[in-house]
Length: 460
Image 1: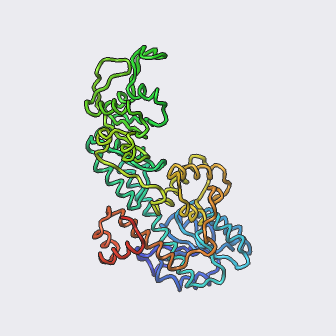
Image 2: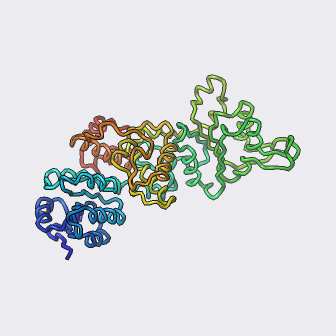
Image 3: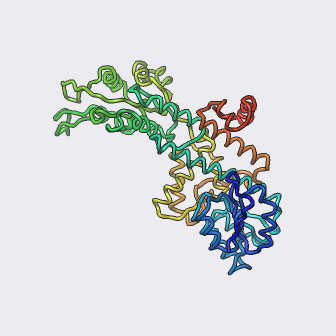
């Protein structure tokens, strides 16, 4: 019969499920852990799964030696897979014999958070569970933030770091007007997603969103693509065709890589912005247009202006507001969150059962420089899902090097510092960088929070 520890039923306590066929071992663990957790007990796989389906569970300790294979690990590993299938966020600490390291490592590959040898040191277990519970809380908060951003109108832009919170705030502020916006950032950072988010939150959201990459179309064809052409305007122009500017009537025109257009086209585009009308190639009729123009570039237009490659008057027409999109390497905990969301998306598309990343893979993701930014992250994860047969993605699946010092692992102080930094970053993101509100949520004084921000080198 399933047993539930009822003496600790405060909703403030995280739920912990002890899965072990030995009542004596469960009693020992319960005695040491019940002041800190709302404890549930199960002595077999079926009971454990039933409890997890019914209760909101944060943590599980799982003995691999469950009946009917009490002397082996097959039943314990099957239980682990089934439990992770019920709740992929739950953190499972596997308990195993000290001679069974191979199955313990296999359990980690299947999704276990960590493993411990028998006999269990309760003080060490308390520390491991505390770290696992911190991580569980952060992942739940990340999911809530992703859902919130979906409701805000930019579900494809995922991030909770302070630098991304500033991007979201600027999107909200500029979306309600028709002012020109210049989105700047490295290739692959998601500049078009920012433009789409502005469009979706604007009064033009029911109109078309027309995007054109000015750097991907030959100069000889770009003018016709933008302005359209009349029949007979040039060789091959067998019929009249509207351009992208006309197609964006009542909506938004997004000009990506605006710094690549020729000086001659810059003059014509400036005229569109000033007079709100166009002439098709080969035409003589002024056609009024009602289109909002958003532009993006990955080059420094200030330098381009000094070199005479970009018109100053066009720059100021396009650049009423600038939105800098940060490179992925500056987005901190966003990297792991993005990776998990993308992994879920691509594994669903491929109909493959991939439960997550190994700890080594997450460290490799954090340590990599990401020259290709979010686009590179997407490509590496899609490739890993396609080629890997493992339920947990490893660094090799991502074509990344093994992380540095992975064998040693973080010290307890380093782990606390990492968690502290992430919690502060998450709180600052939620409060839009408001120190007073963040300090209240974190239950510290404003001077203390300022000190912590400085010590952890957190960018506001």
